[in-house]
Image (cartoon, rainbow, N blue to C red):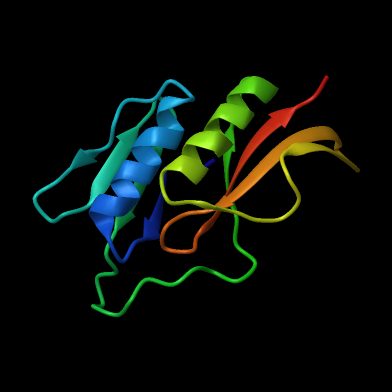
Length: 126
């Protein structure tokens, strides 16, 4: 459904260190920085990227926005969360764990990245 997702970052290098660490726990390669200072993480199905805002204003998080990363299992989600905390992320919401909802059981781990963007590792529990 999505071709790419880009989030704003006030300190792209710090954000790259953060995203390199959490995405490595999911088997992704480190991000690639282009000549404009943007960082890209390429997958078979899309691209995740970080950039300073092009309007020159400070990056800010979207209130009510969350970007979810698919975790293969609960251990991967926990490793993702731990790597995030170790690299400048801040835990938010409830601690990592199972939540039940209309779509079934989900294992969720939430963080705010160094620029305040809310992200989540999600594993659908069978």
